[in-house]
Length: 159
Image 1 (tube, rainbow, N blue to C red):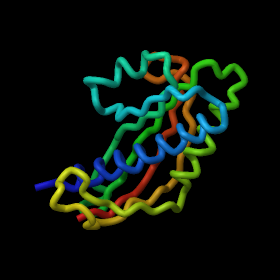
Image 2 (cartoon, rainbow, N blue to C red):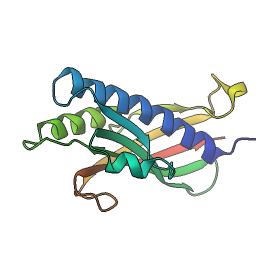
Image 3 (tube, rainbow, N blue to C red):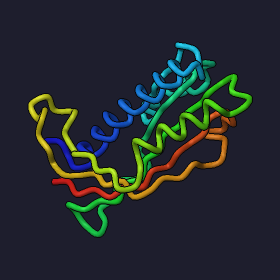
């Protein structure tokens, strides 16, 4: 049985993955970066270290907090998106990435919570994820000064 945490995380993974690909493709088509960019679930400790240290552009995401607030089925959720855009001395690619990601996660945006782990649950809705706000954090994620972070706060109702 899939838990509320699993459903919320799998929904964030799916939505952030889609946003990362869309923003990365926009950066490529706008000639902000070369074709080579990577996406990463930064909760995946097996592969994330090599991707963060790679020279390729990177858009990644990860869960920080999913906690009952005040109790189930209501949850407070915090997740982060990280991006590294090498060879961006003017920060124009970074500004474009920030603008693109902020569109996906603007306050008031609502996402249907699904279960993207259990194939039998495809297409079912278990609640909603409501974006509350976001903030761009100072440089240096995991000791790497070229990686920037956007932290997103959300509320969820999930059964």
